[in-house]
Length: 102
Image (cartoon, rainbow, N blue to C red):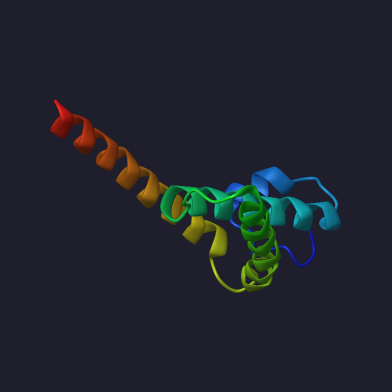
């Protein structure tokens, strides 16, 4: 695939044998999913529906910039690492709270 040599090995499996336009769309979708995951694990607060729609719309538009940057930087890998760290933090925080309640 021309122009997509930078893609990480994890995503290369997803876009293998797919047209270049669809590969970029899949890559962008992966960035959006990881951004939403990182946002929910680390930064999300209870908001009204209208505010949530605005936050997710801005997140989707902002992920276009991350898509452009991902041609030179390891954006997807960084989002995966952030999701893992925040997931471990949330899990440890939850188990710590449960221990303190008992």
